[in-house]
Image (cartoon, rainbow, N blue to C red; front, side, top):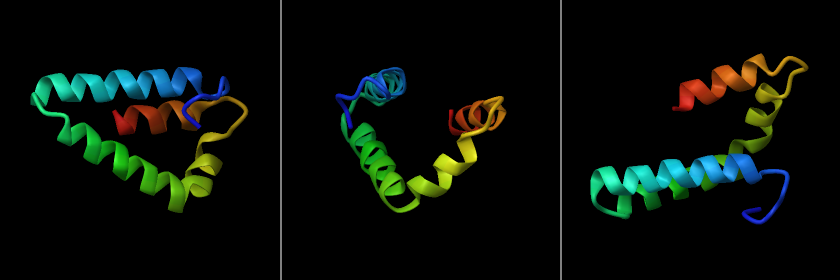
Length: 69
């Protein structure tokens, strides 16, 4: 999943956010916990959230992304 061209922008943005979290916290462990939590959420609820974010206008995707940030 980390090497797909389909998710390149999303993965890049997530990597920047995790790097920022590491710099702010001065520890890699909060970023590791967030990444692990994201993987669990994707594994068990990925289909549900994918259904929420896929619309013709992309409005839900923008709202969902802003809520996560």
